[in-house]
Image (cartoon, rainbow, N blue to C red):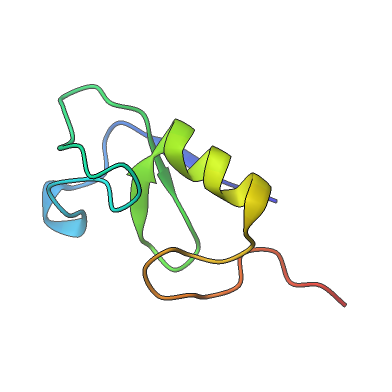
Length: 66
C-alpha cells in the first residue's frame, strides 16, 4: 500500500479538519493522502487503514484485493 505523506498539499485541496479525528489541521502537520485525493492526519489514516480498507469519506477501496 502506498500512502503519500505531504506537508505541502495545496490548501484548496484539503478540508479544514481531519474527518477521522475532527481536529483542525495545523501548519506542518503530516498529512496522508489516499489515491482518491482525500487527506487526513497521517497517524489518523494509518490507524484507520489497520482496521478498514476504504476511504472514510468516499468509501473507495484503498488496497485492491484479488
